[in-house]
Image (cartoon, rainbow, N blue to C red; front, side, top):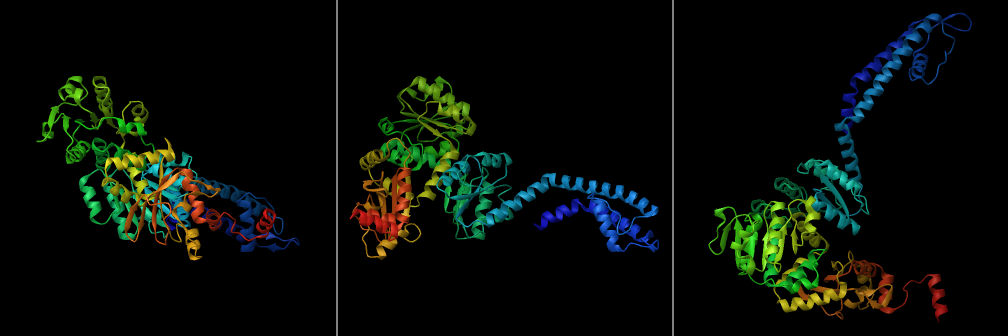
Length: 564
């Protein structure tokens, strides 16, 4: 606040000096000019009377000659000082309004207000640096779970979008450079309620600076960063960044599952991607030769993942330096039919349009489908504003880096056990994944599949701990009962249970829970909300276990007597 006051005083230096001088001269004049009392004797104003008179005269509040009527000389001086003080006030007020309207003053006031609001937070929050596609998706999803966030972005139009977004909870935003430590400090990076810092800008150097500052200021705090450079990825991982998301590498791993394990791919897709693909998409042929158009960072990541799984590849790229010893290279872009035919489009099972030009990518997909309608098509979307066109393109997969990063980060935040389950998933065969997928489909149908983790402890499940301390047995099935009707089961099931480091996939519903157990569930959003009631409210859990109300108030006793 001292900076704001300093700036205001500096801008108002001349108006303040003018007011002081005019008032001083006016007061001295009234003290020196002789007057006359009611007895006709000479009388002079004291400094108190002179100050009082000039104060209400100069501010045009009113006018009265005190304590005695003025002489002509005093009235002449009052006439002069009226105009002098009014003009000086107009000068001062105009300068003040101009100072308030200065952009720098407005930015400082907004920043001070932002820092004050963040400092008053009493609930956990995430610091989001960057409000592009990735940041907006994450903030929106967390807000729907009543999780607080704070946003810093260097572009004012993105902060304007934040204000206009219809979010269920208030999200403070600041337009500033998140790479500066003092900005991060104002945004709450050292706040004891800050539980994580997400570096999501489109500049790798800025993300690196944010991650370094966070690890230096608060070493134990979770840091998640996006990156589009292998060098930055290695740098971020070298000092303990908790999660580094490279959209090209992540999507390459995602697509590689499609080529050799379609059911495992679809399980992964349902758990990670909110707008997951339908179950019927798993029956489309994906085993065979794939064509990759574009050998940039995305194409290189795809090549490495596909070759690791022995998937046959044909590359299309205008640069001869893209040639690889173990696959064919066709020189071109892929937008022409002759190029795709030379790559063997007729007998390929899939094509990936992965250049950095959206128009070229759409043209590749349209031309390829005209030549082979049975193709599995993957198209890379570089510009978010083109989303409407890509949604209508008919491609099986649309790769948009911002949303890929958002989905990976959200999965990690919402369900810390999800990476453990996915690793276990990769170690099982596709038949096992098919069975699991059918069970998921029975629970949610085509609706969004939600996943969530909880630890049997005071923080996540206080009601369960209280019940266990009272000597009651709480089984896994009890958590999946509807707290409104214990005879009904929620649309969810347990994917994983970890106890003392031992992992059990799809644990039995009759397993008795113990303090410290870690559980991963999947199901509908409504099931997640109802389960939160059960594990947090002792009365709810008591009803689910025993079928009666645990409360002992007067109304409860009267109702019990009536039922008897």
